[in-house]
Image (cartoon, rainbow, N blue to C red):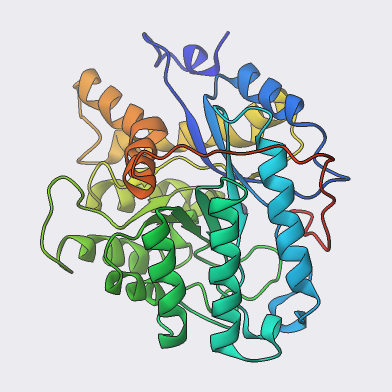
Length: 338
Ligand SMILES: [Zn+2]
């Protein structure tokens, strides 16, 4: 029985896209068939699949890790080519100056080259980035942001405190004001920016002021509510987002790390996020009140439509075109989740 039936909210099946999941590397994730089986088992239509993040911390990176960035991006293109309708590949870019021997501008040039390679040679349309030793406010980073908008990719940024001890101070919501300089840029910030939820909500509210209003394409940035917030803050954080953001700015993402069985994914990802959403929507002035159809529209937007419409604008309708490699690419120096 689908989980949404068990919660009594599914007269018609709730379409679900998980806009935030992580792979960990070639010797760890298991085959893509298992990911698709997990999605099938939990009634999830598509998942954003991030290439493995680098294991070395930002302050440990060196020129040699540039090869790992490329190998890990090769890997995610190959992995997702198994089921391109279901698995949306996201390359990881890392314009950390250390990757170019401390040269900020050169690091950005290298990442523009890698973005173009990912787009044209690997057929990838999504990019994941974790600012560390750089921020989107840096003048040096601007050419990369412009290149991503020009290519037509969807960009997910980490936003908020890391729960596993890595540097977070480059990931504060306010640094993403730098995105507002780049017309045509589309993407989202993760985790509601916890613990800087107020700052994230303020940033996203400013989206409607920073340029000429365009009712057909109003947002550069949306936000996923992947936890993120520890249990005590989940409903409170979501309530702030639901009350103050536009209803189409909030996106479901789980921050699940593969591999996962359907039981694990349901227990740790889909059900907690769905129940937190319902609890917050019950309290929210935008939750639909006693009108179940309004609630259903909100829910379907958050779990499916809000990210898919944003994806279509980011990519201008150009589908990913992933080609399997002749042999499965091996990853290097990957981070193994929380
Ligand atoms: Zn994550």
